[in-house]
Amino acid sequence: YAHASVGTLHVRPILDMRRDGAQKMRAVAEEASALVRKYKGAYSGEHGDGLCRGEWISWQFGPKITEALGEIKYAFDPKGLFNPGKIIDPPKMDDASNFRFPPSYKVIPLQPALDWSAWNVQNNPVTEETSAPGTGGDPAMGLAKAVEMCNNNGHCRKFDAEVMCPSYRVTRDEKHLTRGRANTLRLALSNQLDIKDESSPLGSDAIKEVMELCVSCKACRRECPTGVDMAKMKIEFLSAYKKRVGHSLRDLAVAYLPKYAPMISSIPGLPALLNLRNHISLIAKLQEKFMGISAQRSLPVWKSNNFWSNKKQNASYQFTAAELAHVDQHGNKGVVLLADTFNAYFEDENLRAALDVLKAAGYRVHIPQKNKSASNTVNTCSKEFCCGRTYLAAGMVDKAKASLDELVNHLAPYAEKGVPIIGLEPSCLFTLKDEALVMGF
Image (tube, rainbow, N blue to C red):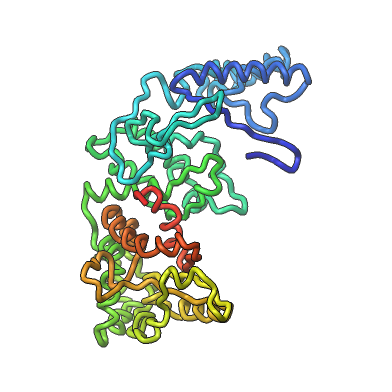
């Protein structure tokens, strides 16, 4: 992770600061300092000197300039209140009192809602081998190690053309930053926050304060140098928090949308009645009061004629995995198109357009539908298959697993045959590609 255009490479040695990492870090720093001094370089480069590099730069400035800097510091800040320990009277870089992981650091035992075992490993700094998942000794089953991946590099504070972190770009408050959230989670998991309900450290009001503006965009997962995935961590928070305080009416409306959407669209006149909310301000204000949904924004328009209404036409989009695994006599390949809840019930024209494009491109399209004749089909999420994303948005991890299990079991034969599986809704696709991996699939 670096400036590849000028041949610069940033490396992050595998150092565990809770064990012998500090001694190894100092040995590396001493050798680097000697090399920089030998070749008359700048030890801190374009970066600040800070707590880590402060003790290594006196030779760089020379005794006279270092003394002058001290005089200026003491003249304007005799008590050392402003940014102490930087350049003037810096601490040793391996002073444990400045570590995020002091000698007393200890993670509290915790059973997370998701499977974080992939992070619960040990790395061998010599061979670079990683132990098996779940063998890292994390009392929080890997969640703490995932949180500790944040090394405070501050890349999430940038305002360049990237996305991370959208909430911070609006509020400019550190607590609404990926780094701020990770540090708050780390403090909670190590019992360093003043939490009244110690049985639910992740579901505390302190965590809610930093998590509530996270939009789960996953920009941090892609753009953070260490891959901190705050969207997954928000699911952990929601699961713990909602177990403590219960689900609001808005939570229930979001979570069960795939379950009640077919009922609303099938009742004559009800979609039109619900759509009055977007045209009558009083109804919108009442909804804001009771459900917390802003009256200033419009909601998706309900339709009585949705994607699933034309049963005869949809029946033509049913193929087995074996049928789609081979090119037919017309040279048409096979593909699976997921009909997500939002597009199916609110913007079905998107799905229709996708079908037209795929058929024009020479594909036979299979759309997953539940087998209504099968007696063992469980109506877990809705009348049709669902990825469970809406349940995750409300912290209902168990219900999301049940819904996703149905969909994965249906899609598995197609995936095994190498049939492409595509969709229109990014959050649904990410659930299959990402969250499913930490939900036991």
